[in-house]
Each structure stands twice: as structure tokens, then as C-alpha cells.
Length: 326
View (cartoon, rainbow, N blue to C red):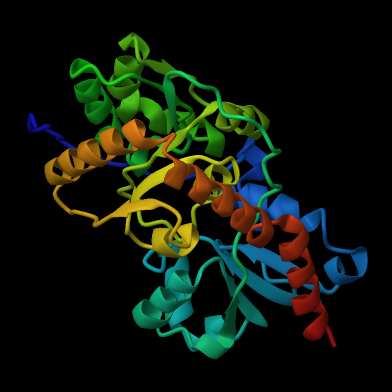
């Protein structure tokens, strides 16, 4: 195989301050944290909302008249999480809620947060409706922010296209989902390559309902992840949509994928990662319609629709808050 040369792009930061609930909803953000917060608020009764102040990751306001719950979505080494090393800061919260067991273990190992101080309530979605995948060309999708692996994916699909592999890639990717469109600038050349390539359609940012419809037409979520996920809502949606997910065994992805992904060993070397991913992606494209894969995808959808369902998770949240409300 021709060796792919991956240089790597650096992620820029933001100085925008969040709201008191820790989200960036005030600048129009529709990221995973905002989606989860909105989904939970829609499912909590008013009597529980009146008793609890739920803060997502970034602490700006403690309510002295309510029990404060810190719902952590970020990595343990995020600057916004470092206050949890201080016992006095930790004691401000009735409980910490983690989105994966992986995440909770890293907060324990990295910051010394006691297991007894928290619990795990995984993320959730409204399941993708039943549908039939289109025949013919295999459709790939990438539907998360660019810093999570797009710089690996684009050179790989460019290479596969040159070798005659039949596929089409739809890219739904922009920091506009967070209200931080200026952070797209380092990825402009990458987006331009998407726009110019006949096998790729670049859609930029699109609302979640548009992405959900696109997932119904997609066969494979091509996700050579390089950012340590604490969960992965994009993966949960793709799995519910009956897509084969290809990703490395990095951070929370093994837990989120629950052994249903085509998973490979993560490699710190971007070039080695890209070459490994290229071979696996071609194999999965070639074998997507194999009986074994189709049987696995049926079982996958049943699992993800059942376990990552907001009906279940909403009930778990209500039970949890009720149990500590007195």
C-alpha cells in the first residue's frame, strides 16, 4: 500500500464564557453537551428541577438553595475540571455524574475524585427510525467536529479513490455546532479538499435532524478518531442508524461501542494510523453486505436503541435525583 503522509492539525481554543448551567446555548451551540442538557430538562418534572441545580462541566454558579449536581462531559485534564482536586470544591456538589465508566476512572486516577462521590449515567438519543439502506455505491459518513479525525480520514479516502474503490463520503463537520465557527480556520484547506473531490460532499454544519436523515442513507461511519472521547454521541447515532462504525480502541470508544464496532488498535503515529485505517476501511466497504455483517448490524440496532434510549435514561435520572432529594 502507498504510504500516506499525515502532517496533523492543531486545535485552537476559545475564550467564550459559558452560561451558569455550563453550556454554550447562549451563542447557539448545539453540541453534545447542549443536546444532553436539553434532552434531560425536557424529561425532568418541575418538582425535581426546583430541588436541583445541574451544571454541565464548567462551574460558574453554585445555587445555595438547591442541591448542586456536576454533570461532567469533558476529559479529566480539561482546565475546567482541575478544581475537583480541591476537597472544598468537590464538597460543593451533592454528586458528580459521569457519561462513561472510562471517564469516571480517569477522574479518579488523574484528579483523585473518589468513586463514591459520583455515578455513571451514559448519554442517550432518540433512536433512529427503521429504514432500508440504499444499494449500489457504499456511502460513508463523518458527522462530528474536524479535530476528532478528519485529517486522517480525508487522505485515506483520497487514496482509496485513486485505487478505484467505489464509495461516496458525506462530511458534516464544523465548529459552528458549538457557535465557534472561527475555529474552522485551521481546517479550511481540508474542507476545500472535500469540496473539490468528486467522491466527497462537504455539508459543513447541519442541524441534528438533517444529520439523522443522512445517517439513514449511510452505510459506514468512518471515524479514525484522534480525540479522547468521554462518550461518543455521533457513534451512538450511527449505531442506531444501522451503520458499521470503524474506529480505534481509544478512550471511551470501546465502552460506547460495546464490541459492535470494527475496532482497531489506536496508534500515536498519524501516518501509521492512516495506513492501518485505509486497509480496514477498504475491507469493510467490500464486505458491508455480507450476511455476517448484516446480522451483526441488526443486533447492534436492537442494543443501541434499547440501552442508549432517552426513555430509559430519563427514568434513571429521575430515579437518581428522587433518591437524593430529601
